[in-house]
Image 1 (cartoon, one colour):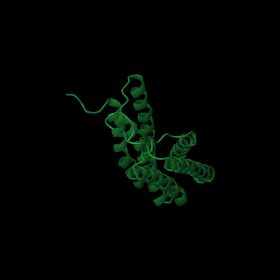
Image 2 (image 1 turned 180 degrees about the horizontal axis):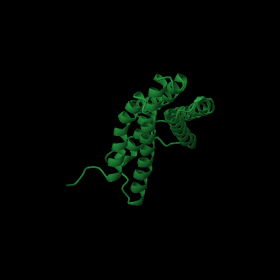
Image 3 (image 1 turned 90 degrees about the vertical axis):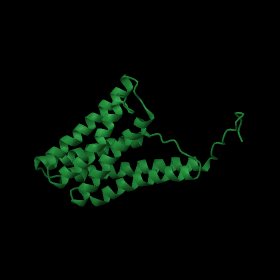
Image 4 (image 1 turned 120 degrees about the vertical axis):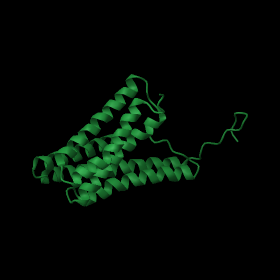
Length: 193
């Protein structure tokens, strides 16, 4: 049987399916299990990326699914933990708002017939790493029954500042992109319209 997606894409889809499990585990106060699901998601992210590169299994679907899987897990956990008052609500709102702003900008550019190619900047990669470390630390501390106060005190401002910096960088990139005229459509003879 010939599957329409590659093995790395199947692993990424499995990671997306871990999102409701992780949320359920947090809601039911099974923090150690939630931490292990979070770690498993991270390991699967590394494995699918390695397989795609090592065995030349990169696909356009995978290029879209992989960051979506990461964002879904992080946003779901930030929101769930904030609703349960285990992380600052302002931080969850900031994290979600940044991603909504980016998605809205991409969709708006597309609707205005000026599609934008998204390329992650270094500040965004550092921001994602900080979010992962913060959520992982919160889950581990909760699982161990330790006080998360200092993790919040130290981590929340760092994640907040990086989220603002990353969102600001995307906004600047978007404004520059939208100020440029869209590429002219090609005529059938290969020249611009």
